[in-house]
Length: 621
Image (cartoon, rainbow, N blue to C red):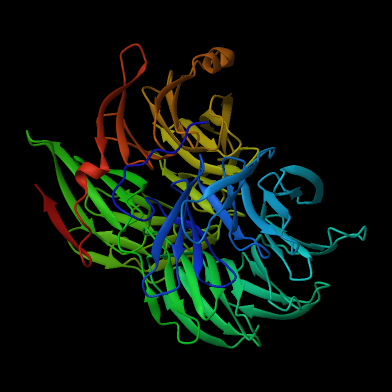
């Protein structure tokens, strides 16, 4: 397993923050990041957090937890399938105490039991496991979910609550033989937190609500938070209020009876994690450090200083390659002027751009904040659409947006007014791709790849896990990339009844981790499939429709990045642009013998100037 390698550009993180955790006294804050690091901040003066120590994993870090009995011990959980225990002294360097390494999948969350000696770890494999932290001994499996287990919270009395994408909430005493108390929801549950007294459990629901439950999981009340998923929650020390991070990009403050107190809207904030301590609220960020707010007034106390520029979306726009990333800037890279490519920086928004599409005149950006932005020299912004927009396509003279809530939204291409909402998938619509003959392809977290018009769509195939991306070539080749570590490719056809079907379908192997993006090169009779993975690899296969074993054997590693490969887009000349979260962009073409070849390399760090103060456009010499 390779270690993440990102360009160094000053203090703080080099990629978005996934989690924040206060030490019980509030004087230290651990922030975790996609860059594979945990930074420990001195928050004794919360207006001026100071970076004290940097801890490192080999993959992104999902969570951190301070020991309740020994405040200098910190546990960190990573997608490298390990939990590390660190000694973080008041002065001097941090040291690694132990590594809990026998996990089978990414670790999503970690929590200490009150004795300060045992840890609960929950994983993408659905399991909750109990460990002796200091000697690394596995003690027991203490729970399981049918889908990804997303969060664990331990009360002061030692009750363990776990939640997962299967909608299951389970509470158990790991020192008792009694069966777990359970409650099941129809929506995914990704966040939970015990109140400080341990009397109530707050559960963050994917349908935008937070439930307050008793120890026995009886409902006390439901608090409507947002039209988008509620992702994280934490309590004030006196249990009088709680703070929710939602996928509308906001922090929501409520008192314990469910009255809204404040709402913080800052498009730099990534509220997949919140933490509360001694009157201070910490939140994750798409920038290079944590955000700190006052719990009583919601006033900003401290904010990160610098944007991160990890690319999330690519699109061809005339002779330019558009690159949209975490900073809200679209970098438009044009032809080589003799001193390098021409570059325009178009500052659309302060929050991340998740998707891009073009219609030849304008381009459209889908954002994490739940907006679509049109740019043709001027900037038009849609109303808030209710959820992040991870996918866009332009077809039939309309803009179609795929949302985190599983909807297709049809937008007027000039005004961006919503003309129609369609409940399309049972999960986030991760990718859309227009078909030249009409209709479009879609891929979603419900594991399905579909084709067709807006209504009456056909399922082409299902993967064993969520589908991250789908791509088409001409009118009759489709490829998809999944978290199940596979790529599928098939030939598309119309049946006599008008339905769409794929036959044959081939499954391609090679990546060791989730496959994030996919594209196609060449001709439909013998296409080349490109796929990028979270294992940092760019892979290529030469498809032989008559010999699936031969296709599988043709697979090869074409290039390695310093971080996961994030997105791809076909270009007008038939080549494909490939971007990694390390800021590297490759232009890949197919030789006459159908072999994929890297034609040239760009780096975002060489293209991007400092972010402008507000939306606008600038040329870079």
